[in-house]
Image 1 (cartoon, helix red, strand yellow):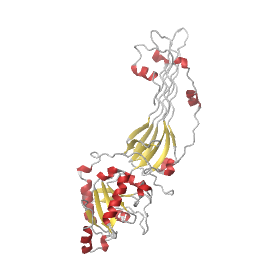
Image 2 (cartoon, helix red, strand yellow):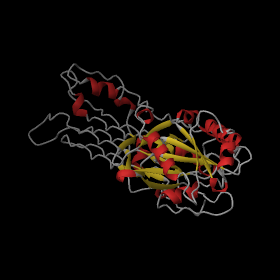
Image 3 (spheres, one colour):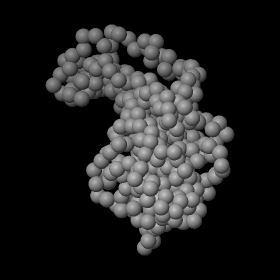
Image 4 (cartoon, one colour):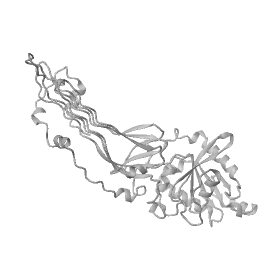
Length: 404
């Protein structure tokens, strides 16, 4: 996996920009003995924004860009001159990216379609200059607001592929062979377990120039929820699928038991997967005759539509596409009607090498040091009175302790 360009899980450190400080300036000019306050407002800090990009298929660019910092807002100046806003940082991510808090595992947001923008971290608001606080009883306010501090957060980005059908099965169940038969995808196919080491997508052509997307994920085994094999790492890619196609080979000792094992592992990963429509395909059926098929049908789990297929000879493939299309186009399977509940990150869903990644400490610049070392006199904050002309938003902001 270290040599693969397909990265679907990455941990990064983001920091929005801090707001610029308001100016404490008084107008001074010849023949104007009492010009009054004219300190301008500080600029806002830059935002951290996620943007969906349909041309991206991996989080690889973020693997080598661990620190993402937005620009700080500049301080205001005399003549009611506003400070410049900090530069926003727009992060392009593949469609289907989900963001979690790296510390708590809490779901934060997701980006699902091309061009969608989600504000991950808000930049700090700029402080108001002293001209906002002048009044009939306070003609020379010698205070101004500092800007809001930056917000720093380490987040985990997960990529969940957008597909209509997800293939679920044990290693060597014939999933990659089926995908290569139904689509133009060419996944690696071999006669040893875990041939597929990363998810594969294929577009399956259907009647009347219609098509749907099928996703093949690495095989799972019994005990995957405990970390055996490749674990449950890649099951996130079928959470968005409309239909789950379970594949069990015809030479299995007990098809019903294998299907129950796969179902149990999915339930441990995300119980919501149990609500998705399921189909069962008995692969490698070219080795069976009609008598054996009839005998196996008695052992199949009840209540699950099933079909015997062979990706080599083409047995049952057209019927399989009909069954999948009917399930995909069913109105009850629309994502709008059944929205995905993203489970929080826990021990089953985390990637150890990413969680153990340690960010190098960053050194604050001179402007940050001045802000945090008390560059603003406490006397400017004490015994402050506002008259009725001060707007409510400014008064609330000035007296706020900046909870964020």
